[in-house]
Image (cartoon, rainbow, N blue to C red; front, side, top):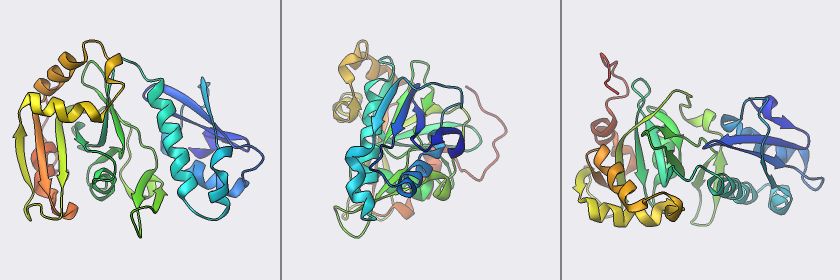
Length: 268
């Protein structure tokens, strides 16, 4: 996949219908740039697609030369912003991790602010379920969930240290359709319940929590109505309260179904 989108001067990615060219620049060591490009391989577009937008990596190169991942994390954020800036305004873009059942395609958006468990959940459970994103999911007017399998960003060794991981090395990545079946508000705390708890969130309260975690809400036609309709389509939002991500198996099976089961069929 990398070979299809990587040239010495740059590589291309596609997400939410937006294709972006990432330009290397002469300052960036080729080996470092190739390493970063590999982590984006799961977002490679069709070889004949011509990106309309570009991001320069030149502003993020100093830390790369030192062997740190901070530059790759910053570059990932810049690419993400570019994609979101130019996405279809009819889509709801939630600041959420996304997982889908590997057989049915039933998907959930796990909504939470930065640094509160999305990437950890995505990496831990993206092996059993299909990984859609650790950062942003796009939901079109038909309820189809569009993933963004960008590099997984994890905090390591301290609050300010992060690493980027190639999704294909750590999680299950696929290209089949995904259908929104649940919106889940994550609530991970050290004082959380030992056994994870799923509780319903009233629609108005859920909208108030989702608004700050929605990109470009005001460009969505009738945004609050759209949010209410989206929540109604999945039977309302639920809150997932927990302490340890490894304990989430039963709760995720309740939301998405057992990933090891082969269902007899599904109704769209």
